[in-house]
Image (cartoon, rainbow, N blue to C red; front, side, top):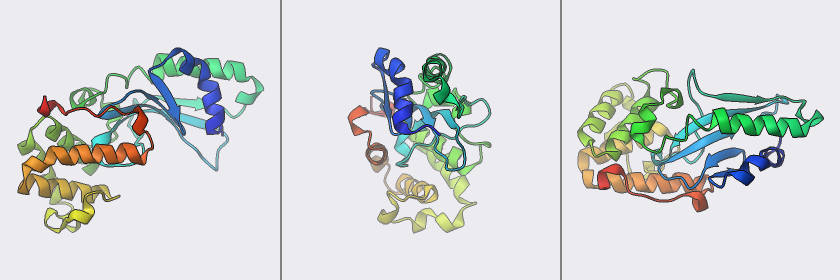
Length: 227
């Protein structure tokens, strides 16, 4: 498995010619970013000598402080074989070419909810009723000011998650590490005081970026409904 330092060295030619890209940890991404972090996540494994890179588009205002790189069929995947050290120059050239021509291009346009909906391979849910899909689209609805649609979607999903009810959500769940509790907190906010919804999304976005230690690459911007 290639280390973060080794991956950065392999990607150096690409990073040198593309000022709109950065590499931190094991993540190659576009910078500066706003509501979506888009790029390629290189996974780490104790059980494999290969390194895999997955193109992703992460909706930052969901309050998750780690990169969500899971997609579905159609998500671009790159495999850096374990023998790359035998010819590091070729490995670097192949990797940089794949990143620039195939891995980054499908996720580059995903800067808001509307563009994300056009790229189902990067939504990361196998069914439109899956809670993670419902949360994503409800957040997207909120970002464009469609609070009625967001509340309806979350209310329907909440029927199947009685242990994570909006009535049980408290302030301690605002930044919960459990997605279901953040969903419940958002639903509670939609029901009680919709003026707090957009500030909540801004808070979740800032929390996510800070947790990933990417604040210097982030450009805070208004949501579409605020323009």
